[in-house]
Amino acid sequence: MKIYHKNIAAYNAKALNLLKLLNKISWLRLLVFIISSTTLITLFSSNLITPVFIVFPVSGVCFALVIKYHNKIDYLRKHTSFLKRINELEILREKCTLEEFETGDQFINQNHQYTSDLDIFGQHSVYQLINRTTTESGRICLAHWLSAPAPNDEIRNRQKAIKELSQKLEWRQEFQASGMHFHNNQSDYYKLLDWLEKPIVLLSHKVIYLVLAILFPFLLILGFYFFLNNLTSLVGIVYLSLTIFGWFFGYMILRKVRPLAEDIVENSTKNLKTLRAYRTLINKIENENFSSQKLVKLQSSLAKDKYSAYNEINKLCRLLDFSNQRPLKKQPINGNQLYPILNSFLLIDIHLIIGTEKWKSKNSAFLKSWAETVSEFEVINSFAGFCYSNPSYTFPEIIEKNNYVHFELLGHPLINTNNRVCNNFHSDTHSDVVLITGSNMAGKSTFLRTVGVNLVLALAGAPCCAINGQVSNLKIFTSMRTQDNLEKGISSFYAELNRIEEMLKLIDKNQNIFFLLDEMFKGTNSEDRHKGGFSLINQVSKLKTSGIIATHDIELAKLCENKKLVQNYSFNSEIINDSMLFNYNLHKGICYDFNASELMKKSGIEILQNISDHRN
Image (cartoon, rainbow, N blue to C red; front, top):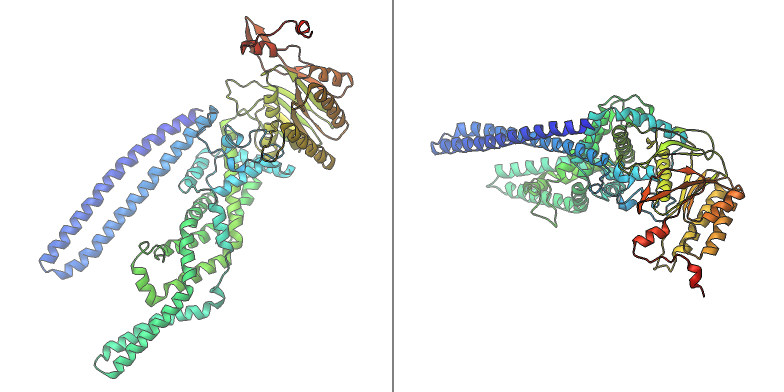
């Protein structure tokens, strides 16, 4: 789309201007340092002590302000680079060039009812095409939406939310870019949840510990003061002894709570990035206006009256930021080296632990729901980007009827628009079995995946690659890529039988199974394959289910047609001037051409014209 190319040019120019500004600020920072240092040295050498106490803090403030401004512009530069990258990635998605995108391999489940067969996850997958999430919980939520159909009302609400968000291009890209600053690794989300589940220790004795933390430094300072005022008397020795004893008592308290403080510091490093991501994304959500029911409901879950998810997470981030000042026992060179000295007098660890436990006690029950809200926003944002980039796609109508599938000009979204061929498909009742025959490479398997992928999108609430569609809420089941398992001693044929057995059990339990079967029983001999194929078709045609079966077995198609068990469709090819041409158009009726022998010839096999002459 032209808008993406326009945005790339604009963000590229903005990034260059910000880079120039950063260079100027770097020179300014150096200049402030040189002027401050020169001025202080001159004042010291002239014994002008009073001006030193004025210039020193002023210089520090000026230097800090320059650093702060530098960091702000550097953030803007990175943010602009992310926005540019987002638009570049949208162009790659338009071309179906998906090599650079996360594959979602962690969600691959060979035993799932359809995700492996339909390329939902992995290389060149639906996940790569859709995913615009930046948090781990967002990726988990997207995987869940793609792995199970939602209830009808939820699908309709998602459709409205996606439609609304698709028109907010600038907000969507700002939202995504904001999360990219904190893109977290696999398992960070679960580390955060595990940390929240850790038991609260000091909070139940908060009053005692806080009294100690407040009185202890006061008494310590008071004792030291009286010691200084009685240096030459025995009373001074008594005050010194009491001060040392008090300090030792404080040390024992700190030693007792040290594991808790160390745990906070260790986990702050792991959790801060995740929390900052949620804080930033929540801030974007809380400050935008939405109208669709689902988006409004999600937004309202983040802020009620004066209670704001953003404010609460911000408090925790500040606590954990402060905890990073504390050196760890196993890493003593980290943190601020003044912290242990101040801590030994002020018992800072007590305040840190109680502050953190107080936050956990108040908010740990809500944080998971806040993360889930952000995750849903990220998923809706992903589908909205998919919707915006494909304006010709349609949101299918979800109808209250069993086993209904209707698509007009249905195509596969993972095939480039220039190469995509679209077909109509209709199945409207129980026992409606469509049998597709066709020559090799004519498009049978691709068509099964086309129907399957678009059903997955439809039942997730997303737009489909079609100009019109109506579907009922279906449970999709596929058997297309059954593989052997050497470790478990399972052949591909036995693996396929297990899939078919699982499918039949699901059909017995549920009326809305829609199956996609490719080349049934291909791991056995032709006679048993023919017998088994007919038997299975005969069986499912009497059950409350529907689906599509692809096969090369023309005799099976003829037999099923004679028995009125199926609707026959086919894909055909032509051989023109020794070249094989495929149009990938779905036709009514049984396949009328065969190309296997021609393909084998092209592979160097010398095909015998009359094999019966060689049987004797």
